[in-house]
Amino acid sequence: MLSHTRPGSSIRSPHPQTPRFVTHWEEGGNRGRRDCRLSRWTREPRLTMVGVGIEGVKSVREVWGSRPRGRILGLPPSWSRVAAAAEVADAGFHPWGMTMQLGLALVLGVTLCLGCGRSLLRAPARPFSVLWNVPSARCKNRFGVPLPLEALGISANRGQHFHGQNVTIFYKNQLGFYPYLGPRGTAHNGGIPQAVPLNRHLARAAYQIRRSLWPGFAGLAVLDWEEWCPLWAGNWGRRRVYRAASWAWAQWVFPNLDPQEQLHKARVGFEQAARALMEDTLWLGRALQPHGLWGFYRFPACGNGWHGTASNYTGHCHAAALARNTQLRWLWAASSALFPSIYLPPRLPPAHHQAFVRYRLEEAFRVAVAGHPHPLPVLAYARLTHRSSGRFLSQEKCWHLHDYLLGTLGPYVINVTKAAVACSHQRCHGHGRCAWQKPGQLEVFLHLQPDGSPGAWESFSCRCYQGWAGPTCQEPRPELGPKEAT
Image (tube, rainbow, N blue to C red; front, side, top):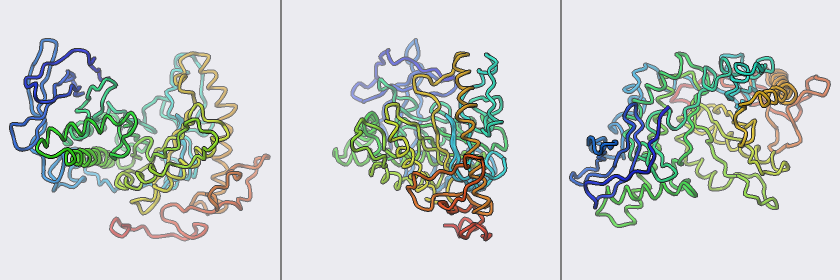
C-alpha cells in the first residue's frame, strides 16, 4: 500500500514570488513531499520538483520537458495511442483485437450483466450474469460461514477474493500516477492532469497491470477514478478545486496572457490532459489484456441523485449529464465495457427506486452504441450493504449475508437468469437477448412463471448479439472490419 505523508509541515520555497503547491508523488520508495513550481527560466513550461524529507531539501529534478506542440503533456504528437501503448507495454497486442458484445450485468458490490452475447468470463454465452465483487473470503476462512455463490449462479473470484480472475478494480493509487487533490488541498501526483508526465504514467501503469493480471485475463478490469470529471463543466461542487488549481497552473505557465485567456488555457489544458490520461490508459490496458473488459466505474453518469425533493422527483438523468456523456464519445470508443453505478441513495424513498435505476441503465445503453459497431457490455454496480456497514467483519454479519443469499438474492438471480436464457432461446434463437418492446414497460419483468415455467415473452423483442441480425436474430451477419464498421 502507498503511504501518504501528512500535510502538516511547511516547506519554504527558494523563490517566494513563484507560486507552488505541496504534492505527494506516489512512486515506489519516492513517497516524500515535493514542492512543485513552474520554472520561469525557460520559454517552455517545465515543472520543477523539490524533494523534501525530514532533514530538509534533498534534491531538485525536472519531470516535465518541453511541451510537445499541440498537446499539454505526453508522448510526441506524431505517435498514435497504439504506438504509445506498444512502446510502453511492448505487448504485441492490437487494442482493437477483441470487442465483446454483451448486454447488462449486475456487479454486486456485485455486478450484473444483462444480455451477454459473447462469452463472459469464459462461460457459455448468456444474456444475464451476476458477478460477486465483495471481499467475503473472511466469512469462510475466519468464521467458517460458507457462501454458496456458484450454486446460486453467481460468478466470483477464486476464494471470493476482492481481486482476481473475474473482477479486478484499480483504485486511484493502484494504476499509474493518477492526480488528485486531498481534503486539505494536498496535491497527489501533481494534483491535476496537466501535471502528470503521460509517458511515466503509462510505463508505471503497464508494470502494475502486468503484475496484477494473469496472462489471458478475461474478466472485468474496472478503473475507479472518481476525484474529477474529464470535462471542465463536470467539475462542480467539491470538484471546483480542480478548476481553481488549473487556473492557477495557467496563470504561471502563461503569465503574459490576460485572465480570460488564462482561464481558456486552463480549461483546454485540463480537458486535453484528462482525456489523454484516461483514454491512453484504457488503450494500454486493452493492448496488454485484450480479452478483458476495460472501463471506468460510474461512467456514464446520470445526475439523477436524490436531494430530498419527493414531490417532483422523476428519476430522469439531468440534461447537463446527458450532454456531457455525448461529449465523452472518445471515452466510450476507448472502453470495452461500461460500469455505471445503480447504488440506491440511502434516503431515496422506495417508490422512486425503480425510476432511479431505470434511467441510469437507459443512459448506459444509449452511450453503449457510441463509437462501436456493436453495443458495449453494460455491467451495473449494485450495493448489497448500507454505507455504514460496508464490511462484513463479524461472524453474525457473515451469517446475515449467508441467509440473504439463500433466502432472497440467490433465488431471484436463478429466476431471472433462467428466464433470460429461456426468452433468448425461444424468441431470439439463442443469438440475442430479450428487451422491452416499448421502453418504460415498468410492469413487465423478465421472470419465470410462479410454477417455474417460461413465460410467453410477448412484451419482449430481440437485441441481437454480434454476428447476428433479423427480428429474431436468425440471420448470420458477416463481421465488419474496423474501417467498414466506422
